[in-house]
Length: 136
Image 1 (tube, rainbow, N blue to C red):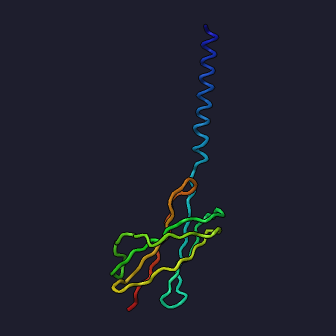
Image 2: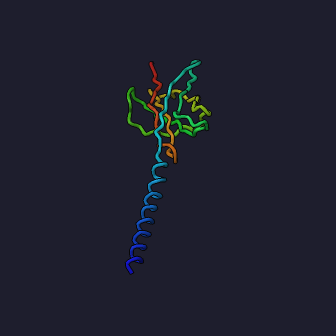
Image 3: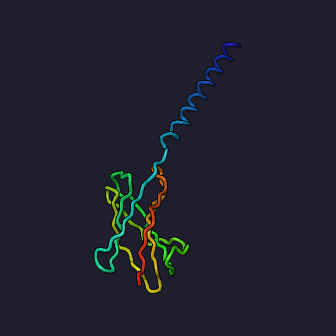
């Protein structure tokens, strides 16, 4: 009777030990990495605006991102909500370049930022915001 009890106890301890190893193994390998998004505005020609930047770390594959915009009728940050302008895709090195619309009539500032969604490997990320403003 004692040998059966010892055998069952040893077997149970072994299975629990294996269960703990299996439970902690995938959780450690599924750790997500933070992304860094840079953004820079250019005006190569009058009234033609480009947003350029890089999403790091690059994985050697294209990354889907979203350009978001906020229109303000004031000279300062107006507290308007961010709206999706369009989706973009980076190259294999993580770089992107996209033409964006400038100021419309009655608008003093237009803010832009780039964001990515969360996936298995990376956390969601948002770039710093940049803006175009009307001088006159």
